[in-house]
Length: 592
Image (cartoon, rainbow, N blue to C red; front, side, top):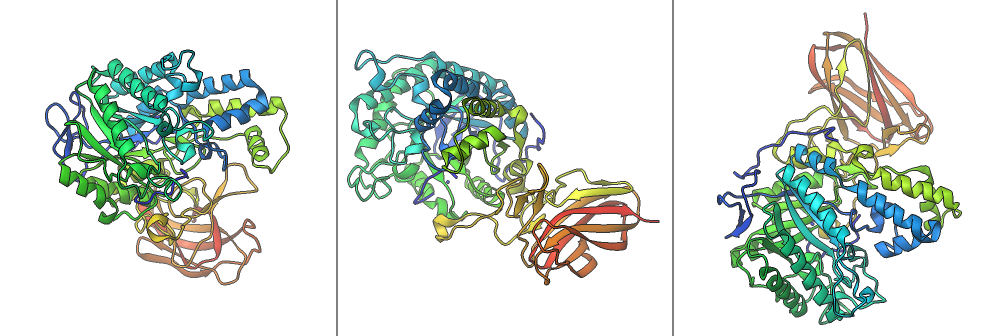
């Protein structure tokens, strides 16, 4: 998970259709976006609801995205890599990473799935040297790499008619005490402790605005991501959640705005409050007529109260609001949040598109040599040889490419379709023509309570104080259903930790009406587990006893014979009357 403690909280395979929203909005761009009252509109004055994805991990790595639990700043990750494979090969790793992580195919896929905008988290060190590295103090050396990457991304967005929002995610010196977010080195002056870093930040934004002033597909400038700094009481409030004045933050954002407006009068400027984007004390009223308030939302309830603070600001100052970053939760949470936001005409950008994790649209695959590197870094294994470490790291960098990513269509469906549809859909095309095997983890796509029922569906710990696991196995799918990877077979998964009254639905397209046998592959280490099987609301079998097999992956079958299934769609529901078992697959066979 993205490591924050928010006080207020936020390839075309598997493409899903873009659905209509609750509010009448336009998803086609028509010239420059602008703020008009409480709406973001295009040049025709049409309301634009941004549905976006953040490219976290591309220009700026955080440790958790690579499977690291500590030393999460990018400069520390780089130091660790250099210690294993040397400086030259580390440069090669980062070149391959930047070339593969985000490509035209990623943007094409996002468009096909139903997104209309991209948020680019920028690391300043791809655009300019650090203050400490400048050969002439006070001067700015501009680096071509960052601008070239941004130009390419903009071209891909233009080709897909998607808006690109530039986000300064790592400002010179670092903008907060949550170190990973901005790759901050606490041994050096922060953004707030160095006038030179502030001047470089201002100069960078002026340079970017000058370059993109006439680009209508640049949606906005998100000028400082998640500032989290205690100005008045740094000892007790290091992240600025209780800050009352925020004077240095407001001054810098005003100065950045002034510099942008010297060269660019048209683009929206997005501002973020202190305390990870939510503390606006002392910052408002707005100082520009074309401005949007951003806030971030993580791990809290998806009720009106959770966003009321930003709606109050929107109403008081007649200014649009945008959820600039959210995610890192379950599909249930995603569906709830998007439904809530769009009812309130608030656009959003999810975080992130991909990482070594399952709760995003794309998952970067790992490899055995890189797993050895991770074990060594975590203190649980021996130091790998340089050739093995090099092989694992280079393979990981290549695996960031979408062509090798695992597409999580359940995540995409939960974000794009499920907020507005109660329909369920098959996860796989389950066509029964004689015989069919369905893996238990391939239950239908749809909302909790409609495609499946699980007691532990999302993480709301910011609101409730209690952490919740969701999918306890953290693999394969992102619903509340618990899924674990099999220890006995490669890329094999099963449903685990099944509790009383939980169930799973499987839509099966039956070619011929007739009589079938149904075999369920199950495992249990207790004697009390019971299961029922339904077709729709009709019981095919009730209170079947699950045999005690003695281990989590010691499998046995229970079989139902002479079960009648009609032609067409049958919705089989596997229901736990009494939990305490694991479930691997369903086998259906037509009988004479």
